[in-house]
Image 1 (tube, rainbow, N blue to C red):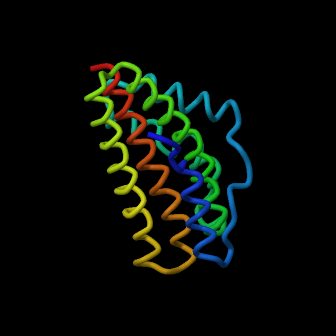
Image 2: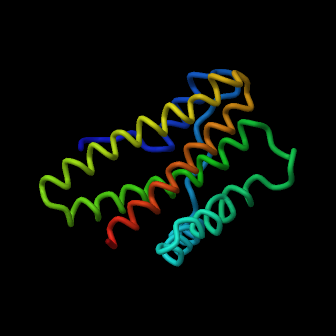
Length: 162
């Protein structure tokens, strides 16, 4: 399918396009954060709803965010982007695992499905800026990209087990 833009890259591009306090994520996820999300996703791989409820934001973004109102919109976007990197890596691993088990016709359909999903994710998350047009959109876009990427990572894992 060629190279695809990672969730973290999309967040960074959106932040740069919006200007102002835009910045790239401040740090890479820690090994403990990666392990926590991967472990949670594995534990909940047979129940996508439980996986989203148990794993999304609770293990990395929420602790990073701290008390409500304690961070700027840009800092909150950064917390979501840090978690987004983990989900993006998991999505890519799950996508590769899925492609490895498909025949040529299924692979072509999976690639088309993934391209369509990427377009959906990008236009949906960008709409936060289109609608709000303020610095709060930074955080909302980053949370959206992370949420959609997490959901997709879990779905691709589910497809691999069918």
